[in-house]
Amino acid sequence: QAQLVESGGGLVQAGESLRLSCAGAGVTISPYAMAWFRRAPGKEREFVASNAWRFGTTKYGDSVKGRFTLSRDNAKNTVYLEMSDLKPDDTAVYYCAAKPFGAGGTGVNEYTLWGQGTQVTVSS
Image (cartoon, rainbow, N blue to C red; front, side):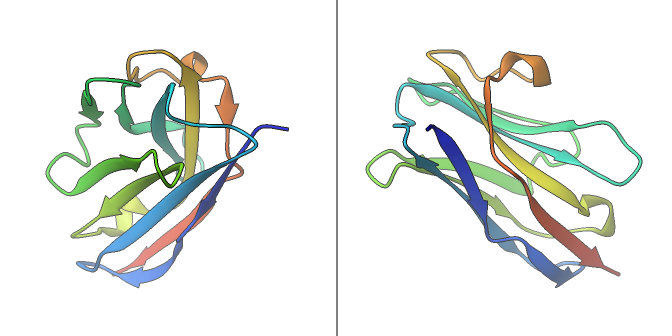
């Protein structure tokens, strides 16, 4: 059964950094566009970053540009989200998502495979 497994969440202070990982289990991620979304309490799921399945095109949400970096290591079957200069507004559950052979879109409904989420909490 294909799964995405996120890890790396936790509690940090404002200004600190954190790295999230998303590993494919029972699925090879190399032919997938990969993305990160997040859901803060009481809010809709928000696009964070995405990466096309080839040619490395990466997009970022406006609120994280310049602070977050998405990367992938197909040899390790893992996608990462490096988060720096974290702010309390970054507090959310972060989800990894995948869609086959696509460009890295920003819409929730574009993605067909989701992880269970990992909590990131940023204190002020």
